[in-house]
Image 1 (cartoon, one colour):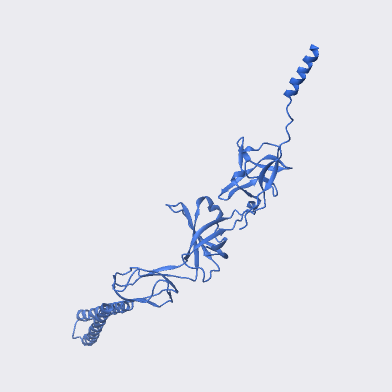
Image 2 (cartoon, rainbow, N blue to C red):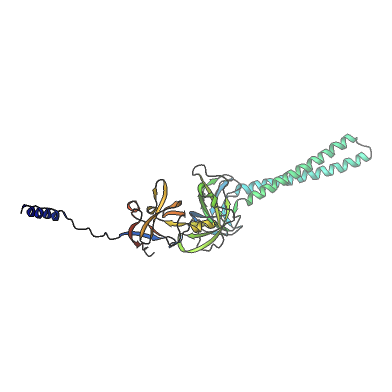
Length: 359
């Protein structure tokens, strides 16, 4: 009897210790992206300013007071067109004085010529000595030199009367004005700036770390911020031989080959440097959250038959929109892009493909 009770008690205790068998955990959902689904473009794109290739600063060649300005900023001008005028009264007086000096010198020269002719006749008749004739000959040469001098001075004075009119030295558009009527200026002071609109270019600043991608005469594509839908073609015309001492960037000038009327000076333009390295085409762009490090190695997690597997990769350039993977991935690989630090090898997962928002 006691044995039966003991057995019954043991069975009761054992029955109370039994636990239900846990059910299998469902696969963990993970957010993934398909490598190669988004085209990778590693071409360098920089922002620059539209500028004229040729721009000249013009000023008067004489001193004076401005009495008239015939152009305004933004006005187109033609070569030879009068831009501004000085008060030419003093210039005309100088020209008149110089002309009077010419007339006086001509009279002196005519007298010297006549005197030499008479002295030569007297010398032929032995009435004067050779030294007396030599004196008259020297006076003739002196008068000839004096006449040439005053004529040259008269020409200068005449030119200065013309310099009272400032004319455009090229076809273009007025971009800046530094003087107004009533202002007294000195020789060489900048009055206006004229830009040649026939040739426009974009000035961009290239960081020294990307200078290897810039080549002279290489083709580029240009997009104006005012019209992002239209593309222009360009050519790298000039590369600065030295970096700017303050910013440590290299100034690069790009000629716009097919600029139209919608391209205005001073506009903001984006310049895309076409990548010539074919190796860049094999790179894949992934979010930075997809890249992790295990035992000092760069790793990503890929989904193979619904199981998470770590894979070593070679990370390239880090960009604002992600990181470029140059080796270790193939087109079509499903790469985990969220929660990579919580995954374990061969973990059963349920991939959820990332859907990009429509632009």
